[in-house]
Length: 237
Image 1 (cartoon, rainbow, N blue to C red):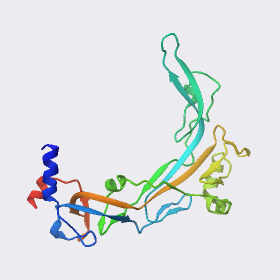
Image 2 (image 1 turned 45 degrees about the horizontal axis):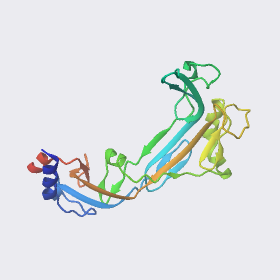
Image 3 (image 1 turned 180 degrees about the vertical axis):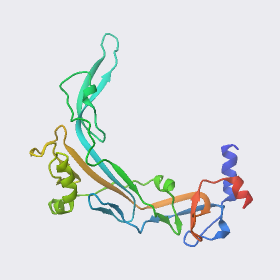
Image 4 (image 1 turned 60 degrees about the vertical axis):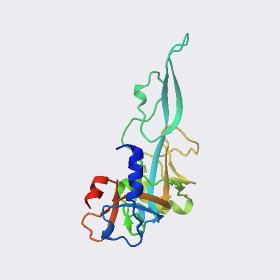
């Protein structure tokens, strides 16, 4: 089916629904809904005591300050060469594979913490529940940063202990970052090779529009969600 034909067919097939009172009568129908999403279940990163309310995603970003090697291909009379820059990276960079010596990163051992995303599992649009794929496609990334101050040190006790067991300093609150130096006796403030920093952002629930096929939630009578529209399935309903 051509795209233009599909659009015309969708325009004719789409039915109005009340997002706050879905019924079985529109099961497998193509529905169009707009409104404000919400999530009554807090998103929690238990390692750090971070809680995001009415949000559809909470993200933890863990980075280490490291050397990065870049290869430059030969051009004309210029031979191929390598350059080295210090960067914040979410993955360990193995400097033992570098072409030139003198740019040493810490050995690529497992980090005490790594980056991760916590998506909302009960994000709603009216009385429709969004599935994981739909939550992942919510467009308005608000990127609100969690801010840290001296009063948060006690909340970070367990995370700091884990950092110290791995040879780092305690986590120090610095605005939107938690910072740990590369060695337990290191008190430098400036970024240095091996230093780690951790930040958190959360995306608040906001306006969303969905054009999709209404289906029932698995094992939950009277509960509805969406999937990609299948005209053949809609015809048989």
